[in-house]
Length: 467
Ligand code: GLU
Ligand code: MG
Image (cartoon, rainbow, N blue to C red):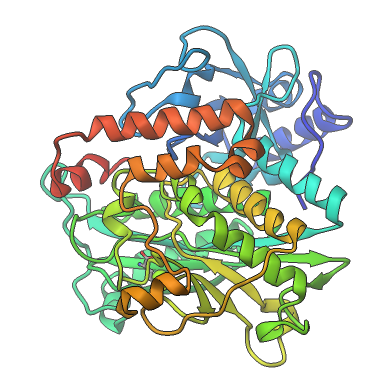
């Protein structure tokens, strides 16, 4: 479980002693440096590193980093607003010692996610991880709820030796095919070994649809831990790949055409150890609260897209009939609706039932994405929102009149359209608070401006190696 208390100057009780002991143990294991990781609003993981001997000082007083990254763009430009993007000021990065992990794929290094707090010791209003902790804590307080979340990871494996900037798939076998497992068997085995050594329980690893594409799914955790894990697993996928002469991309669209890389989110709400998505009197075993939670997700999807699909490249992926879920609809085990209701296997429903949110990719900051998804679901749950009828088959094939009647609409087709829907969404903006909401808007507008005049192939190329 994630510690829900904010970091404090001097360290939370016991942190410094714990960090001192940890540092000694890490040094003994040959760990020289610690990677402190957080994700900016654009979805790029930014880091500082400290020598292992500095861990206790970091746990007590944090490590300095500019707040400018709240409005950094994926291409390293900076968007500015009245209060964000300034060269002034400093923040402190506080490592979450519960999540410190020795990196099996990078000997000599350990990794830890951080919370960002101000020099005055206050939570930084632009910190996505703090935001997600807050939403999670509020749901526990107001509704007695906890959540389990998992983020699927799809990625493209290319050859390191490819011509500069180009993507040359490192595997040539068919989609879901055994040939790919043979072609990249050593890499994939090292990846599984690294995940195991790092305490990540992998559910599945398989070749995906697009050229050179793979997918890994991991066990569900509380939302903050799930977001942390998503960063750790991607860091590991990349680090292990380098040792095999491979280069990986999590970009939503490595190429302008064809199927992209998704980052589907699985979410379930629980009370007192009971999964609200199973054993209920609603559709497919959902309780009334799970139906309302799902209805909240559905209602807020257009505005959510600015957070869950934040890159110009995201809109190259979000196309109908490619399993990316681009219609405001839900269905049982359906792959074209934005929301896929999953009951799990008979006998294990109580453990496994959840709702999968598909229009999410790995350019998304996972803390912001999960926090906004929870805010949307909780809005539905709190207001007793009614889940409309389910949709089966491909919504793209529904006659326009029937789609309109059933409320099945296409999600935003561009980043500017998503920003417009986000601006109009009071629930999401209020959940984020003014600073994060402004950062999201400014960064998305900055990304849109950065690609003005580019064609699809140029957009794909511009973001190919940024995520
Ligand atoms: N690659 C698809 C996407 O972009 C998802 C395929 C799948 O269902 O796993 O979301
Ligand atoms: Mg997949």
